[in-house]
Image 1: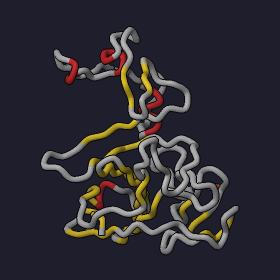
Image 2 (image 1 turned 180 degrees about the vertical axis):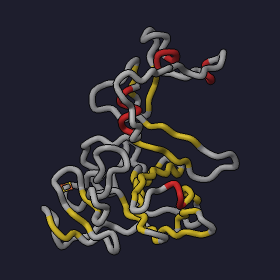
Image 3 (image 1 turned 90 degrees about the horizontal axis):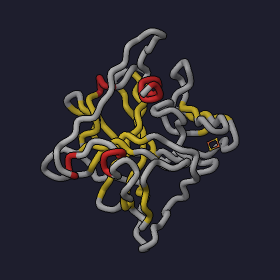
Length: 212
Ligand code: FES
């Protein structure tokens, strides 16, 4: 719970009181935690790839997701791990699991949800595939990039949404310090100087950031 608060920028202080719990339903579809789903670790949970879990394992990914009724891509808020992310990775059945482009017109979030300057991560699940990207706001301007550093193919932010230098002027890769110009994604310094982030077209209409 402390990590959850800290990762989201909460100004938690010594002496603060925390209350925690899950909102669960009476049947398995309504269970609200891994502990409930596995009945305290007594029953295994099948996960994609044919594996099973009772508890989280080191190096695993935790995905918080939500989707709006009526179909369309699902949107995730994803905690990143230092895992190589080669373009065009295939899963065991040969499906492309990582996309580098998205359909146009999908609403991402209100512009005002981002600080100015600020950045935010998005993961869109489209069928069996996922797109990982982030947007950067400067004033009323918003630009998007695929979340993959040209240096080693890693997602740039270590803490969630931590894509910018402290002054907000540049995009910074949290692993080996590459710095990118927000205007065009060009690497200005670091181990991939001269290379560029892959652009993810986004636009703002009626105060909402959308894919373009
Ligand atoms: S992975 Fe980004 S600088 Fe090395």
